[in-house]
Length: 248
Image (tube, rainbow, N blue to C red; front, side, top):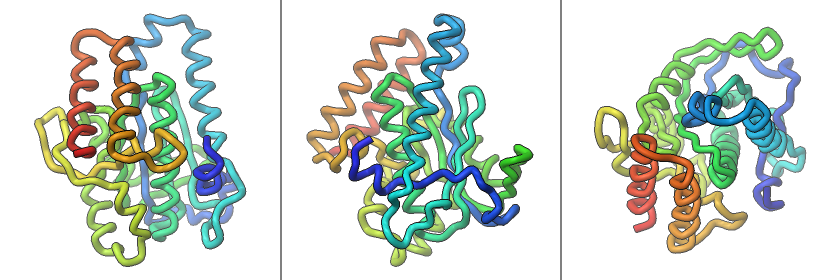
């Protein structure tokens, strides 16, 4: 990860003592696409190495050099099988900003390495106990269901987060808000307007121009295309349509 973005990332502290057991939080669910098929088509060792690489990217987020004013213990991640869950400590705007950097960078890095994902972000009352592996709350369900409905490689924003952004727009940094785009989103039920997180902004250390972003994203999707045939290519076509919309 580039040094500039690394300094913006959060330290995922395994100590859960400073967190309230139950609080209003942001929740992001990321799902590895085609995981079952990959397990069937690849050796156990290959899948392990892929998951190990993804775990290293999560470890890259454990950077103590966060900017002044940010809580280094604002975000925690948990992974199991083909799913990554990311939680924030509270609904503080700083937590939302750090979540944006964390999710955007992790998603882009995975896509560049051939790990196709889709995800969703929601918010609300959530109970978390890391040591006992207890995770419960409506936002976890909302993020999971919206992620399940998503039919492209991207991160869709639940209406709970959209309302939060509208209510706290003056407290959020403009360059964070700009990373969220309202566009026609391919869902399994059809094309529906939603906010999305523009993960392609993280395909290089500095924010790319629209022309650069389009070029980088097409290269990532080309690599994904070479690994898929049939119905899974629908996700590639849908992702290209979203990126084209965002970059125009």
